[in-house]
Image 1 (cartoon, one colour):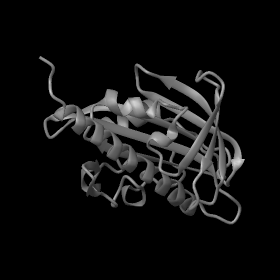
Image 2 (image 1 turned 60 degrees about the horizontal axis):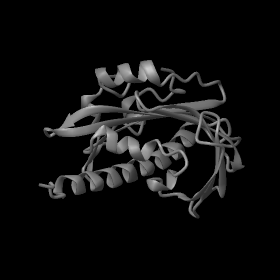
Image 3 (image 1 turned 90 degrees about the horizontal axis):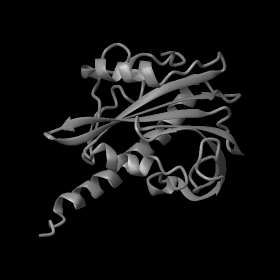
Length: 215
């Protein structure tokens, strides 16, 4: 996959900024190959996260390991109409359409980001393969021609059902910024979203484990 010149593991959010926090695991750099991910992850990226960034664009891929089963994490991710369920920077979402492919949402962004609104179109949704793709088509921000793909994959973490989340994106580099600066900003936002997703999903998973069984 072409990642707009950010191919070294230590340069990307999935690289040397690893560690463990909030129960969810960021992949450590010494477990990666030269593309920033392990073999199985590389195959997922090759098959499902294809971007072809132009000269004025950057692209990157992030990985998150969540200690919650896929069906639970997907129940949050698939809600195109309710991104505020786990995205901390979203204050409000208004839908245009019936939640089918091509439907559009108008998102209000909380203060703290250089944006106020974002208009986003649902490009692809697959409940069987756990794939969601969106494209930003308008709004008050600098992320022009932004599109992203997020996929979920079952795995085992410490003997319990877990989920590998992969999110990739491509976006124009704004005038006055470099590719590295643009990728760093977008990666920071996505990392916040994925950390929040992990927090919410793992809390729900813990509740499911402690609920009494009806007899």
